Length: 383
Image (cartoon, rainbow, N blue to C red):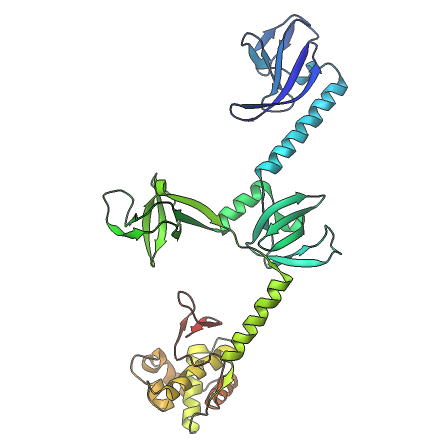
């Protein structure tokens, strides 16, 4: 008989692959499992669609009879080979249509190249946690679009298919975008809970993962707090970082150098005696003794900027010991540093700062990095 081979893509969706002749070798076709279909050779009419593997197509006979049969009932080895090849081709096409995301598999960055070769010209990079859309798949290489970067990346340095989606869900932030005007954000899930504020349409909120989420509600970050929005009025999406072209990297570095040049300057010297130098070196030791030299100089510059500012005392001693300003001055750490001595690098940073050097411009404050904009050097942000 003539039978159509079909493959089930999604529940309720069937597409035709090819048409072949189908002959049963006996009156009974044994199904997968315990079921049995009784047929007369050459008399049955129907279609075959793939069930849970390519080895067991599903036989759909006219009149509504349906069961699973082994694909050895196909007419010949050639037809079985054609069936297998077509099945695998369709699976591959379905997979490539389903999975379009690629994520960088690296602890630093991976090169994006003009052609699918290690010898090809570099056109950009993908950093850790960056991803892109798959444009073309090759032998061992994948062409992706990530921001302005378009090129080939070795598959050795990419997460693909399910792995890419799983990795992205793990490392990328998810945002909820408000779809309606004046959406209420609440302190807890539920329509009767306290309202924290109203959100305009288009507002993006970073979501907060929950082990046991409340159905219909999404936990989000809101003005430094946590809140909940109704899932019915937001659209959630992953924010995936993009790569950079070589030109974008060059421009970013150029602008960064200009900004740094504005911060690294020379101010008027601060009048100081030997005791002031020692005191400044000691407070640098207490605040940034475990930081790089640039971090030490930055702390010294902040103290000297305060002396120059007019809003603080006009000498090193009074600035350092001003009430509520430098914790080590009141905790006893500064006194211990003065007693035990400090490193040469702290002394050098103190001398440079007093001489007018600064790598943080006119910043008069610093704190632990995180939650505030400013110049970040080591573990501190200066502002």
